Amino acid sequence: MSITVTSAIPNGSIDVVSAVEPGDIRLRLRRDPGPDALAIGYYLFMTIGARGQPWRFRIENVRSEAGARLEGRDAYEDGWTGTGPHVSYDRRDWFRVPGRIEGADYVFSHRPERDVCFYARWAPYSPDDELTLLTRACASPSAVIDTLGSTVRGQPVTRIRIGEPALQKRTCWIIARQHPSETMASYFVEGVVDRLLDPDDPVSRQLLRHAVFYIVPNANPDGSMLGHTRANAAGANLNREWVTPTLEVSPEVVHIRSEMERTGVDFFLDCHGDEELRCVFLGGPLEIPSRSERLANLFRAFELSWNAVSPDYELGHPYPGGPPAEADLRMAWNWVAERFNCLSVLLEQPFKDTSWAQDLRTGWSPSRARRLGDSFPAALLRVLPQLR
Image 1: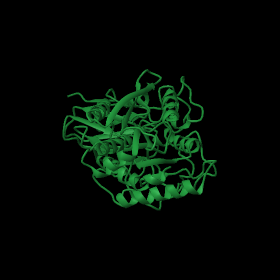
Image 2: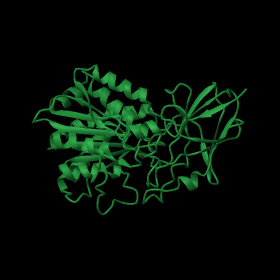
Image 3: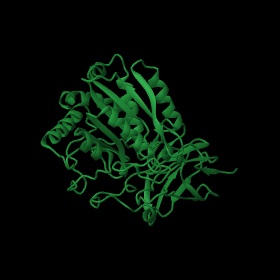
Image 4: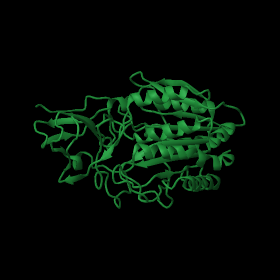
């Protein structure tokens, strides 16, 4: 009986070096186009034909190919240590199997119970999932779906508007997936959208009386479709493009920025994932050139508010390596804070798990990301009057 190992599936990414025997599958990570040294690490692939047999996977040269790290991370374990891939038979229930570093390689083993099995750095969010979210949202009278513009490859940058704009209302923006591999951001947005559109939810009803939400579920559709880690189709890290984006290299940022200029921004949330940290982490507008005590106090109030409604956001996790002396305005949350003098927040969810509560079967999972999204409206409601 032949076996198959392939990434030729939606959002798939891996290069197969050798797949002759299930016990000796050798793979390599793909590098994104462009100069970003961190643009490697995502994988998603499918196996067929070895139910009940012991599979052993070796991703070669993880240490040398994916060794670049953000500054200030030396005191933290790297993204490959102490964790394993997400595995699924049905692409809905994702569980973990242990992985480990062996020399320069990353190795994990699994005996699949079914003929078809999926393996991923973290549970994917497929194009069909994105379409399902859009169609579910547009069934609500509170939602309007539109397109802000096109990507490098001509895909639409789609937006969900929830609530009616009005001069006295707060204007709240949420974007996700600037880095396409950080799929927990999509599950978070799903939780936010579903709660905001629940007509029986008193928190959502109160929010929509006083705020309108503009949500971009996927700010990098090309990178998602191509199975990239951080880059769009032109090789740009969109979260380093916010000062001088161009239609040739980063049209996604051009379109989102242009619409923000039209609507204004009172609150902004940029949703990401972090491979190394074992916490849900928030960054605030604390180092921008126009930093102020007002914005610092507002960010602290929002932190306390979110912790009060969800223990999955833990207090007491400082910025790794300490905060920078000056904010990098090429990053979305910093640029938006400086441009609009508003509460602008970076959200990082873990690829691994939280430190306060571990799930040994799944680690941080799609369901936990959705629940975090579900908690967000209540957290925002508590600080909404202070946003302007």
